Length: 238
Image (tube, rainbow, N blue to C red):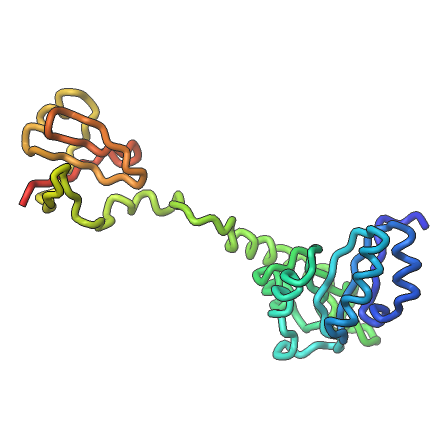
């Protein structure tokens, strides 16, 4: 059978003889889980695992069309926790809102019925996407992926310009004595002369920096340098 992959519909998830036959071909499989419980899913996937088949599992609601309030997209996260395979979503709702939302909840694969004319007779045309709708769905999914981002906890580029206005805990010197914030100094120190003029105004000069990199200016004085801002804040002992 010379095909790149096989799709097992929800109706055939309980057809274990068929699944075994497909698994023996070693062709990658996409299988939908509409109407099934966990035990039925386990039985089907166990056969695929026994034959070392590559597969993806799709959450699905077998109703035509499926009511949005019964789609239960939270199952996507549960399936991702239960099974070590890619998890996606097969959509039978009207419109494209639900498949886009499925991506936000972790679906890495989206299936949507397709038609050239949604006004044709038949059970699927009404809930299917025509060329214009499919194009918009893909556009919205790509936008959702950008909004989701990497999930990494870090300083974002759009935040760097605001970083200088943070209000950190009052710093202390080496002896544990607290400093209080005096008048901010907004000089740009692009040369050594401006540095000397500024450091002579206070015992301690500090530029707030996300990475806490200190640079010694002279005995008893410190400068925290942030190349993005070049702004100094003066501190004075209480």
